[in-house]
Image (tube, rainbow, N blue to C red; front, side, top):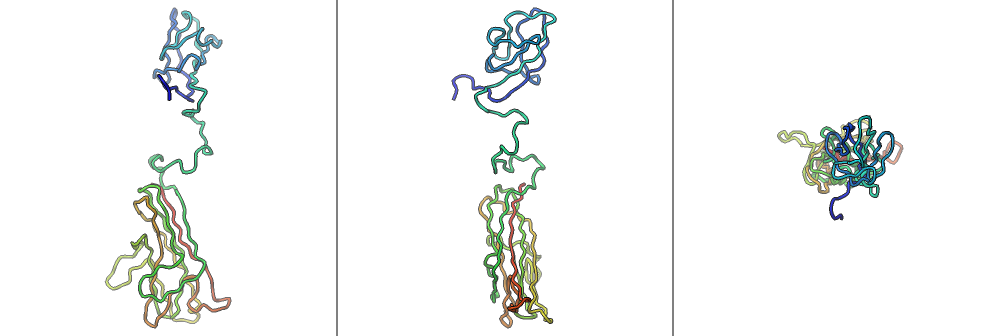
Length: 276
């Protein structure tokens, strides 16, 4: 806290060139055509005729006016006037002095980005499921381990959701249906059409030799607009056709043979905040 004028700190400026007027001692200081007022004569470097001048005795300062101890004459040259600001505090850094290493992680928000500089990835969250899952439910059921939560930094952010999931069926000629859900809202769905299942993806095990060993890879890439800064959970749900009581499987085949052709694979859900 200061009484009187708050110091200009860390703002080093070179004043505009000053033309000497014969018989004149006082000159106005400007930077970029705008008057500037140094803190004091001690916060200045002034060169006259190639000689640095002593603050207080060779020149004084009052506001934006610098006054030499005696009138200047034709032929005198004011080489430069540099304003130092306060050397006791960093204050506002000079231009081109702040490197990326000096910016604290997370200090630059999307609101500070220039127009057109969006599209940057703000954060990434991933859940990887390495165990297996099965379900005989004919209603949409949460798939354990296939969920992840993210907290967007701004309501204008989007969330890019990427799902890779490996599925199978325990019975031939039976289907399963899967939905990507944000909170309690299904997203990335096909258009509703009469009695057809509405899904993010679906799977049918076709009756054929070796189909019991089938593990099919399904993927989703969806750019969502949650419009929130609250924690938001994305998850996968699935259901199976109930005729003959089959199960859908995750990360294993329907037959799940205890052999080289009985597989164990990993699925994942990845969330990426895309800054506006």
